Length: 208
Image (tube, one colour):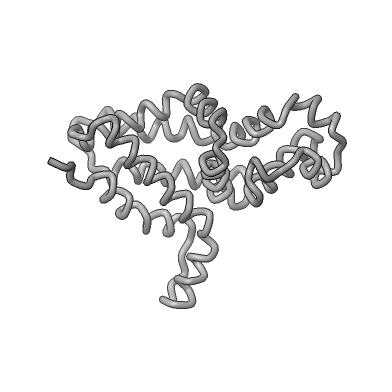
């Protein structure tokens, strides 16, 4: 494994566990067994390292999501919000091809970007991968044209929180399903459980 990949893997694991704010470059270099000069050489700064960690996943996810959401936007009939959100399943599961538990890792990292107030990361994702965000907004608007931009912001924000929390605790949820309900669930089935719930939230009636 290259030095750059060692740093990325160590940073990803620590960011997911302790957050971006709670992880120092010294901790990353110690886990990766490299010196600080190697981090500076390959990434230049902690912010650039965070971007690189997220880009490994986004570069895989973005084109797959663009195709899935593009298909929904181009169809003649009005889609349901469940169909729009279901379009995320296969692209998200494809992240497990990058590394073990890639889907959960990515969503947990994405959640850290919000809970750690990493505004630059949200700016980076929206400017680096604008097509996916535009297609998602277009698909939601097609499914629920009466939804205002403000209402959409709040509802998608709450959706993100629900999904991130669910995926960050997916192992515990799978154990509960097995112990309490005698069901063996996969990550895909956990995601399928949450989609009707968030679709109902995004599609809730508007106040008069």
